[in-house]
Length: 133
Image 1: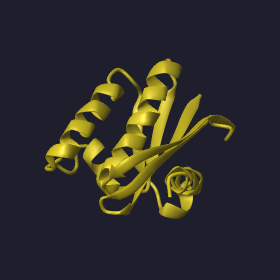
Image 2: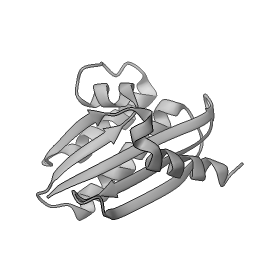
Image 3: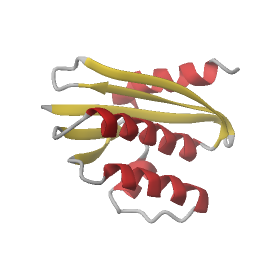
Image 4: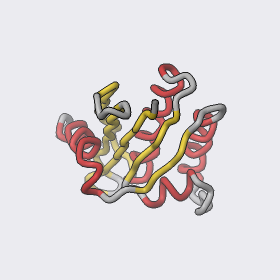
């Protein structure tokens, strides 16, 4: 079985009011988990990483040997997690380290997807930001 994870983070203003959304489904498209979390004042990239960490934390606690596919429309996030881009920003380096730690011993692939293919996670991220407006 393959677990498909969709994450999105955003900030209104950069930095600004931020939140993330996580949508996790099985290979039949059935919902396994969803999360919408307000983050306070963060940058967009911090929100993206915090969404990924939220998803990876759920995976660590709930997924054994299944293949996991992480989907995000954040080019920076996906390419940094794949090792294609260096993490230069000190505040992102800490989040990147945490995300890398959570991927240890898991069968995880990272996929960059178009924004249109990430609508559920985007809606959950917006819901989190709207809750504190």
